[in-house]
Image (cartoon, rainbow, N blue to C red):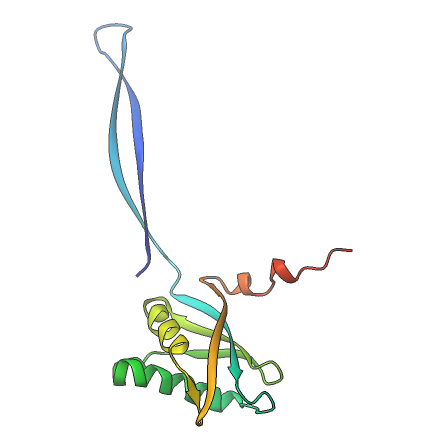
Amino acid sequence: MFCDLFLYRVSSLQKMRAGTEEAESSGYQRVVLKNASPHHYLKVRLVLEDESARVSAVNLKTFITSCLRSLFGEVGAALNVDVLKYDEETLTALLRVPSRGLVKLWSSLTLQGFYQNRACAFRVLQVSPFLLALTGNSRDLQLD
């Protein structure tokens, strides 16, 4: 699970009971903020050696499962990965994975080198715990 650890200085003013003097005491408090998002979203592109080849959404899902199985065995294949959107023209997909399985999915995709005995590579374009963050890309923004 992804955790952000923040240490920050906490200072408080304590008034003395006896008079008007104020004493400042400082200490450190440890605060751990856990990622509350149950899922992460990945925008990936499959790059094939044969650019004319087409992969259906069902074949892509099967290929992703086989990538997980080849690296992590049956435990990896049991990871729940959803293909939310897939474009057969550009071979770009939007995937949803539980946050605890993000690293497993990412590593299994990037280490895969062949699809049906042809060289291939997955390119991870964007990753976010928020689906809305993947809707746009500031690098592709056209200003008028």
